[in-house]
Image (cartoon, rainbow, N blue to C red):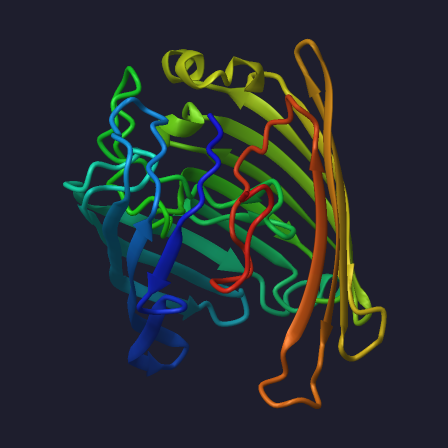
Amino acid sequence: MRHTLACTLALLFAAPASQAYELYNHNGTTLNADLEALFGVFHSDESFNQAGNRQPGSTAWQEGYVKYGLSGSQALADSGALYGAVNLLSSATWGDGDAAGLTLGDERRTAIEDLYLGWRSANLFPALGEDGVDISGGRQVVTLGDGFLIQGDPVNLGKVDLGANFDRGGAYYLAARKAFDRTAVLRLGGKQGWRGDLMWLKSDNHYQADTSLAVANLEHVADAGTVGLSWIRGLDVDQRYAQIMGLEHRDGMDTASLRGRGNLGVKDLELAAEYVSQDKTGGRENAWYLEGNWTFSELPWSPTATYRYSRFSEGFDPLFYGLSRGYGTWFQGEV
């Protein structure tokens, strides 16, 4: 399902108000209280009857969420460190619901958002760099590259009737819930040079047909930029939701990506590009983008000029793409 929306919005916070308050830190044990909150006020001069529940005219609504809980780590002498988090998230939509009718304005939900445990190797494996082995599992946000294919699991529908229950608590535009339901992640390599990831991701988002994926990623990180090669294999979908959303092809689908991002050693320059080839039942699809940014660092407020060109073939599946650079930017295929 694709939507073309034109709306004006005013965010009372340009970015989530996030804070971690240190509760305890002693002898390698840390415990933090985490808080993240965001509220938005939205207005659209037009309504878009995507789900058959909107009348012509303007729409006004509000969205908000608060994420709160605990995170921490425990050093294990000369054996690295354990880390983890448990966070709840409360989300809501008020007013008319969004302009497309994907939320109705009376959504309220509180549920676990983050619940994961991991282990980092510290300096156990010098050849791999500091924390060169990082193993984690549970409910957490996972990003691949620049988020062109995987940026968490961010689609948050409300009580819209699409033939099944797709309600995820609303806050559709703020993308309140982003964590995959179940994950197993192995990261190898430090902050420079060659590094890689092996991941298993399972969504509980009915909009995504509860898709599960296997991911392999290889990157080279240098001061001038990062080059990455990724492969994603669709392992399974829930057929009930897949038939409604047209996602049956994900079971067995292969997606390969080549990407790069960096400044090539030029202070105010940033370049990015990615090409994706997707092997679907019935044919091969592709998508790509080119982007350039220049920051005028000598001017007041250091403004940045950005140009991006994106192209998607008609049947391309964007998977779990999302906003990876924060509010004030935009994500691929937004309009």
